[in-house]
Amino acid sequence: MTAKTRKRGFFFWFGRIVMWSVMAFVLLQLWYFAHIVIWARVNPSMTSFMETRLAQLRQKDPKAQLTQQWVPYEQISLNLKRAVVASEDSNFVNHNGVEVDAIEEAMKRNARGGRVIHGGSTITQQLAKNLFLTSRRSYIRKGQELLIAFMLEAVWSKHRILEVYLNTAEWGNGIYGAQAAAQHYFRVNASQLSSYQAAKMASMLPAPRYFDRHPASNFLARKTATVQMRMYQVYVPR
Image (cartoon, helix red, strand yellow):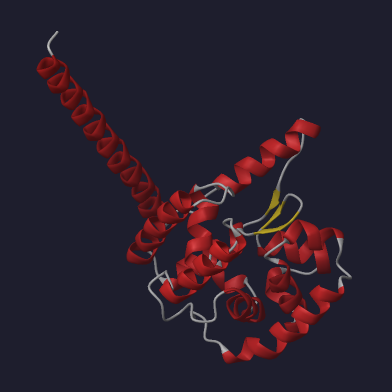
């Protein structure tokens, strides 16, 4: 085999690999998009994050189950909607799913720290991650998260994005959604949460399992007070 033939064969297979990779990428995006279209009207019964957590729990207890009860948007306290938006994404109703400034700031902080810790995620991005991706931090995953976030914003209303987020967010060890969390922490329905209760639940979201074990944390108390003061300054979908 001559050098020219080997070179031609290399480029042939390289081109094939690139073509297959592009096709696989496009098909994956179409798979995500199809689910987003379906879930615009049908409530997702399980998310990627929920499946991962359930598998982890079943390693210790094969009969383990997650706790979740879906409730419509209208049956979730306005206090919780305001508190979550104030705590997680105060510009939620105005952006297109992504806030570039927040991502740039997160990248600078990651560069200073030498590893990917901060994501600068909006509620839409967090939902994209929860629905389809994993908790593993990388810029490849962040890129996919951004693409899914744009799909969500293109197909769903802000009302639907917040509804699904509040029903699928992790709020403790095996506890998912506003209704299960309200029952677990306060023995009330999601529709009955007071401003303080809502602010405390919203403040738990960055580390729900930790705060499930440490509900009397001083940090949690301070953040709850801050969120409770800010929650009436934000707008939420009606």
